[in-house]
Length: 244
Ligand SMILES: Nc1ncnc2c1ncn2[C@@H]1O[C@H](COP(=O)(O)OP(=O)(O)OP(=O)(O)O)[C@@H](O)[C@H]1O
Ligand SMILES: [Mg+2]
Image (cartoon, rainbow, N blue to C red; front, top):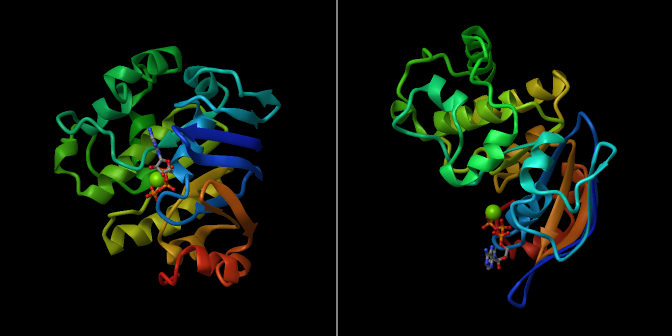
């Protein structure tokens, strides 16, 4: 599905992504883990085309995305959520689902399918699928933090896509909603979704991921099943004794 080869990104001397090679298999849930500053978000940004790479290739399906701008990568199937929630808090759930993410992303959003004409029942269905039972006119500012992350996920699902990329879906989310996310990802997988997510919560990673890719200092340290990876001494060392 997603194939990344020798990908590189340098920020003024910091090799944030350092020759990364891996693939994400279709209809699998793949986690990307690693200590703070390992380069996970930068890797997502380079894959999605938010920042240009300094080398390497990114392929999705049969397409070479490497030289394509963000909106064409989105059109070819990359749909994502961000580490920090980017909903419009002064708008309703419906408006958030129908509207652009951010003014500076306007070109990106205008150039892809914006479901302004999507029937209300489609919007309700997508909210229900992520477990938001509020009415469409519900003000998004009244959502809890975890619920607003569900709204971001609903928006990502609404965009036509081949892969869902989620940057820390449960960070800062209260325990009950975290459990909801834990059921939701496999549920989406069963419906045919390919999910690639970044997360620090290892309990969550163990519960939902088929494959775990570990990054440290810009590099892919190892990959395997959660069981293999989370007892690998190199991974424990990378986390410097943090509780995994
Ligand atoms: N726009 C930028 N300009 C300069 N340096 C950056 C930029 N974005 C990231 N970096 C640096 O690149 C490295 C990787 O950062 P990144 O945000 O990708 O890490 P991360 O693995 O997502 O960390 P976290 O788990 O804390 O979210 C860090 O050293 C960071 O300071
Ligand atoms: Mg990050």
